[in-house]
Length: 262
Length: 61
Length: 92
Image (cartoon, rainbow over the protein chains, first blue to last red):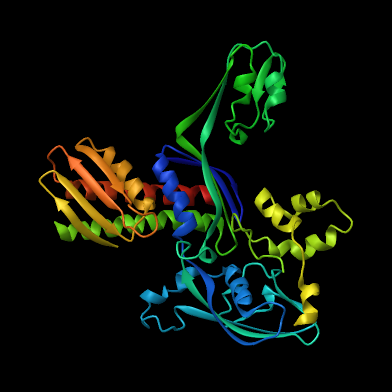
């Protein structure tokens, strides 16, 4: 197994994962989307809402706001020692009270835990006009994307096989250079050169246009270009590690239960 | 109100709404979206096609 | 996670893996098929959202439970390797 990181910022990761099976790459992708736990608002007590939004619309909008927190500090409500009743180690309360006229942003929410805060403070929640008022208390809990997309840690995760482009004998007609939608082919002297092979979308247009059948497009079945983003709840590198950790945990549980079966 | 996340991919797009709304007064919306880092066309249509109804509804509250 | 043995013979086993999805089962299947003692390894999810997967393994006579255990350990090793390499590369 080898990893070659192309891009790694706080919210985006792109790397080439080689020497693994397609099922491992897919498990990793599925895991980033549905198995990594993050915090999201799950319960909303509405004390006053005279805004243009209905209570349930307001609650839905609050739920979708990504919360930045160290998820390791929290337990799942159903696994918590309080038995799911709600305590400081399985839930956080965020309060919001505002009066119009103003636009209420996610950054206006006040959290009881200073480590838990909205990942983007500029998300508009509701626009209040004259005499409009909103007073809510929101309770955030830990969850996974399998239950609801508000707990989805990874966003737009995907992979493709590593493209392989072989250019043989060529009369440098330049048709392939023109036809490539990703603009990755370049005419250099009397040769066609590939500039960024990773950008290739495997559309095979170059292969079809070539009159001499000099271009061969294929893919490596054991090498993948993986891309995923986060919505700010955790960093992209944490997400990759947590996702693999989640698969590991599950496989570990399986071994444990099989031990007891004999 | 602008939806918090993109309907298709789940990326948060509302965080750039205020800035987008201000900048499209003078600039080309496509270029503003590129600049704000809204890459995918699913996210771009969220901002491009949004119609703000708050002002229309407010008198009936 | 919970396991229920649906059927078991000398060289065959089908177990219901309660609460799991393609994420674990598909990796496990690939790991099982890499073992030369395994003749068939597959799983079935009857209904996409409400059913639990049933894993079926047929071996050439070896103990199927031991073989699944070995495959799961290989999955753990692969994840460990990924975490280790990724952490190292992410630092650079």
